[in-house]
Image (cartoon, rainbow over all chains, first blue to last red; front, side, top):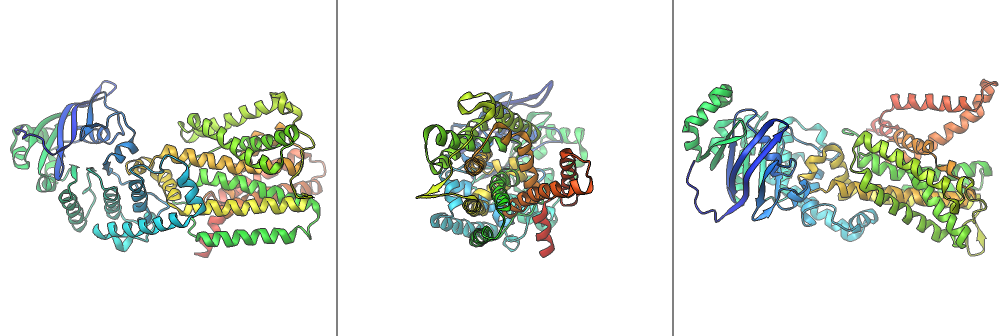
Length: 275
Length: 323
């Protein structure tokens, strides 16, 4: 474990989080922090509890005990959309696509939420009525959303597919879109669940570039990735889980040399390290 | 619901075609026998309910087997106000829509906690419970309902069958225009997003519960408006007019026309009503000994065949053919 400096820029705090499914402990008393403008790698063999941990942070799964907070605001106990409104968003191991929408429209969904202070639709019924009546003000907002969606797609390098139906995307394109969509909500914390799996080398470069760009714009990126080489290369710090417990935390180099970590990988899943 | 085509016609196009439809009806009613004018009114009112249901089923990806109850609430509200309080049906129409919306809003807190099959069952049960209320509440006529419900009037002109057909289709036009705007807006896109990947949309800040609630309430407004016009145009309602079978019919109209198409709602309503009429005339000729049950039997068989052959609805096939 590395010595922690005073967490002046702490954004996300995970404190003593435990998740039990019946008799199985998926996450066991895990504590760590993630800071603005850093990439925190979350490593561990299959079944180490990485995805469960992401589910807890993003509000999908309520922990058995412990809590997650963001800049002092408690996230635990809030709904997924409220956690998102507070600035925590994520991607999934299998990309979630909005079939029936185009690529651009998918990004506009994320932008509309951001536009209205976090969640969409805003509390009163005004939005539904404005949309139904097609008021000039609402149409102007749509035009703005469209422009901003294109700007986001341009930044992600996928503006060429803006008008395509999401049903027509290849797997790698789905990953790039999901990432662009997540960045569209201007998150404080971005959880990426295996964003590189199934991608070709060009797409891997594009995703890594997006991760670095997010970091330099101040986002705390939490990265779960089986491609350990890429993870260690892009991460500023790494947390290692095994059987639900945190077994190591520190710089990529320190973690890679940690005998406990090597043992966990070789003991459980030797092939993972070669990815 | 993945893979269902989303209509991309522009809102202005929706408005123009809808207006054309009203003009067509306004002309037709002068040439049709009054029996068919009545059918035209019926198709229009059913289409109106189905447009609302399409928003809830096709876009929000939910199922409601209780829409007939909201039609009933609209009809009973307007009829009770007119018969008991001598309130004009114009006010009754708005009141009917509001009461249906209010009931849907309250029920949504129970029903929308459930998903898919369970939601379908819950809305079915709610429809039946509301029908029981119609039957048992003596103030609103109990099982005998309301008779001699006052009609709509404009100045000294009291609505006849022609006027009701035009009113019904004017409401359809407004309904299509509004729903068309909704599905082309951020609201509609958010609905498609939650029906395709609810959790994914939520992680972007989309409040799926609120979206579904507002859509459910909007669908009840469509049903309530249709009910209020129904009550005055037929001048008689009783609980059996708003039974569970009518709710099933609305789902059929929606699916047959195409759940993500506003025109599908119109086509679905027309097909189901027309099929019923054709069978009523054809079955006795082909099978003289057959009684009324056979008509329902054949209607069922034809509808099942259509669902198998056109699982995404008639409009979806039309759109594919054009593409």
